[in-house]
Image (cartoon, rainbow over the protein chains, first blue to last red):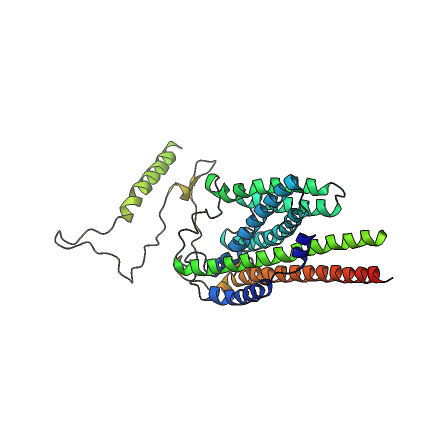
Length: 227
Length: 135
């Protein structure tokens, strides 16, 4: 009950962090506008500064959901289940951002909206697993928590595959070596946007966990009313 | 027939031999002077080279030269995007604006959805708590 109460009340850092995140989001387009154009892709390359951080949050969501589900399967703690559910929603959100901004960039750079490339396909599969998780949790009835946890583990196993796939298969997607070799002028806006997205991820996760804690409290109230 | 084939072979061989020769840089005027390099106003030779792809042997044994459609504008000339056919125009700005707008809309929509769900549950909790407290 104490943990439920902890989840319902927002921590003291939440509002300042939300304000900082809002300011960072407002400043990021200005910073990106002053970033030099990439030689071959030009203006459209600036999609990268939101696409890549969103993709990283998408993968982070997969890891958080998988780890929380594994801990839930071991301990049956409702708190872990809430974190897993919240992270699954964020996988869908950040995955949608990645899967929409990527094709907009690809249409100009590669000449196609979509190609069944290993990175793109595995990302789509991971996103569909998260959608399946949410559908199972919403409509699965009793036992859907364990079934969902199994799906989340499967989704987490896909995360390293998504990341390293470009290094092992022939692909037109940029490799993982792009980021370590970025010039400073490209690196500063990228890391700024990454921290902004990371802060947003943490804030949204905390809010979504709070919603689940409130729902649990509501269930307790309904039960006490019936008695 | 044999004569025409021999002429075709001669043409092909002469084209293959003339090609590399034509691409060579000009010889220096004397051994002491360096070779003349193309300057900033260098205009590349755009004379079409004749190769096997320029000739066709017809069924009745005649050799026909295929006329090539030369490009109307040189390759190294800038072309305004407005002169391209509409289906080839693909400016980057709408893609960029579309991507950033989608990110903003997706995050905003999720925040609104989350806020509504939180408010709905909080309202329901308040109602039930009031109902329980009532004697």
